[in-house]
Amino acid sequence: MKKNRFLSLACAAGILSLITACGSGASQSSTPNQVAYHASYPDFSSSEELYGKADLVVRAVVQPGTEVRELSSGGTDSDDPRLNPQAGVDSGEQPAEDPVVVTVRKIKITKLHKGVGKVGDTIEVKELGGNLGGTEYVSDESTPLVPGKPYLLFLTTFPDQPASVITPVQGQYPLDGAGEPQSLPDNKLKMTTKNLEQLTRAASQ
Amino acid sequence: MRSMRPARSLVITSLATACTIALFAAPAHGTYWSGGMPRADFSIRTYSYNPTWQGPLDNGIVNWNGTPTPAAIGKLSSSPNTLTATSYSDTWYGLFTSSGPRDSSRTFTIKLNSRTISRDATNFSNMVTRVFSHELGHGLSMADNPSTSSSSIMKYTAWNTLVKPTTYDIAEVNRIY
Ligand SMILES: [Zn+2]
Image (cartoon, rainbow over all chains, first blue to last red; front, side, top):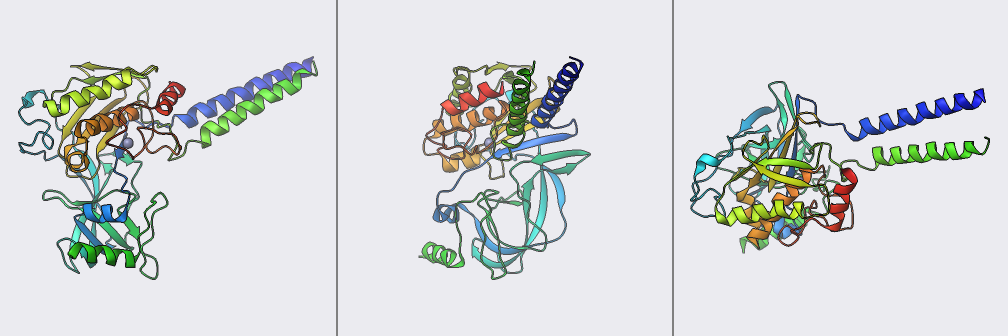
């Protein structure tokens, strides 16, 4: 009987610790100094659509160094009710501006496939998240660009802010030793140099 | 008493299995996101946009509140949780930001990007409802792009056609809360 009581206690303790382990594992939530970003993106169904919607398509090498910035929306004065949700509405009701924290890197263009720019140009590219003022802004979706590495990048450019990869998964292709683009694990689109040349040719016709 | 042992070890084994599943079956592409709200009933600050946006946005809330789940999202002028729809110089459709620990002090903001939504909308009101419903799904602790063959508003597909939380989404919210 004693043995049994001991067993029961051991079991209870084991179960408790399992439950505790379970609970803590399932709720690894953000601490007071951590802010979590969850961004939602399109999923392009073809390389034509991806190429068509990108403003700038380049091969480029990521430069060392990063800068963390807080960016405001910029908004728009457009009269188009779709582009400007506040068109014709009293702006007094809108919440205060809540900036987005981004990490900015520089990339140096080694080949231009689409858009405005030239080989040797350095442009800024931003990624969601970064460490600012003791707070860590963490983005689940980002795959940060690696300094020193060459990439094929599909970018969206903005007049007022650094460019962004068109989506974190489908907009960046690290180049292998032969200069061939490699898709990130979650990217179902495959991109080859030949494929890209065809897209560039089709676009210029 | 002997016969109790197998039963006990069975309990422990199933608990251990349940734990293992809970711990490891939800990696980056699982369905549970710890950045969501601690409860499925929460508020969002009253918002006011033009009729092209307002109705479709409201439908995003109505659709969740109409599901057989504990989801109950209320508009409140004093809510710390906000929605902002405007043109952002970035490539996302929506951005959910979660601050604070997963308790009653947690707050969120939802940003909707009119730039990318206008660019890709083939059915504008559907897409506005869908993107907002998707972001509210993050508030309900669901992660992006669940690795399931089931249809889900948390996937990155059918932004213009799939508008209401699906059977899968409903089951997930009921599992989480
Ligand atoms: Zn999302």
